[in-house]
Length: 580
Image (cartoon, rainbow, N blue to C red; front, side, top):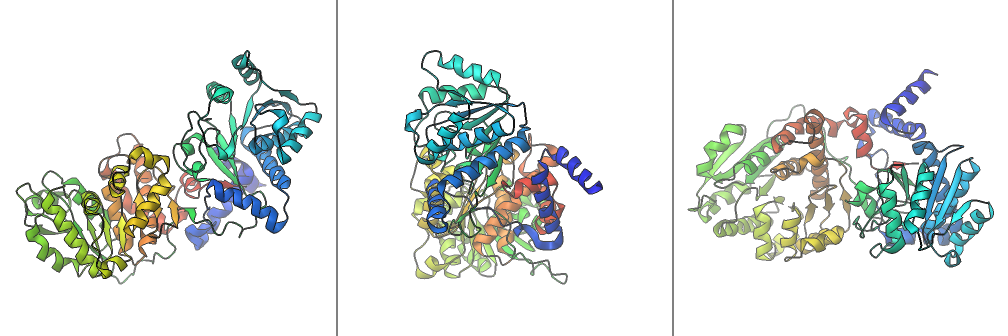
């Protein structure tokens, strides 16, 4: 039929298997029917321990034997080999099976590939006598089917690995899975390094071997896969860098978990809030939010301009900028639609304490306050920052704390501790890793990288604030440290000076739209990444500037309101892992 031919052509164009394209196409149609970004339901992301509990619960609560879960995982992986790698009769498949249940999954894959007519060889990296329970059952089964099973010896190890890879045209990594807790060494390192030197396609089971399941960090060395199928739910290590980059195309299979089984998992792939209201056709500038930006200092002209203009480009109505009087003429050249408030300044050209009365008077009439972009670390300005935070806290005005205000906050040990300040639900912090280190009392960045999610949670709970940890797949953590969103939008071109200032303005616009602080932050981060993708589409990622991202915000807002306008390639990424 014509529709079938259209599907086949589009599948070829997008590099997407027909069954997955059909699922994706229905999603796009649903979006065009105004179901918005919440269709399909956003994917949850589990820790290793949560995944272990979900596996155990499936057996204990629903009577699904663990061997059926393994069989389900293996069959789904075999189908990915068919759909993504073209496995068929005559294919030469090598499966590297490690010592645990990931190796057991590999044995199931090998059995089904054999049944489909493929020529299969299995390199058994674990001690065959040590396999237990389900992995042993599947090892015994594949052994009796006459599949070539090689247990490599220490002598000529590299030659044996190279020979089996040279023979094959498809490779399956079933070595470690998500439970890895120590550095990869010995024969396992040899195998992984050989796989990475090989030129053929690699499918990783659950996660590329060598990637830590909770952090995405590489434990010495890790497989670079062309695709990964992960079981039940994606793991944090599948979604956080560098693990995400090593996994290639990510496919998820629920291994027969019922839809409610993972309802307690509180980490999700971000989606924009469904509560963002349509623009009022009779609205005026006051209808679309009033925000005061306290930003800028001598030599720091870009940050205040980018933040205050991003608010307007994201749909905000009335942008005010309080900055040192001497820099306002320079800012006005490129931000003429912003209302400026010149502030008394220190000898170094930063906002001085003499500005407090004016700042207090302006702040109390605003829907939200942004403080910090380009303010400088002048000690007198730090006192201004803390006084403003006290004022907006007592007035219960939502506040976005960015840039140099984060440093002042960290050095002061926290927000002012009056009761009304403490109860203010509208605090949003937007640190990069260096600022997060300061917020956490000097915690080394290397330690933060080792467990980014824990560090983000620690900061959210310490400051009773929504925390944005900026980076690839930016994290947003609610003030209680429980709910976390992983942002799928954006690209490497956004790693440029001023990009974070545009983000601050985007969050402020969503905050002024009467979204909750958490929803506003999640949606603002999502929007900011899309603006970067708009810029990259027209310019490429190399050489993008923050001004290019700023220029992309209005188009990104049209995407935010109507996802059917997003191109197919980007929409696939924004929706998160493909589901089977």
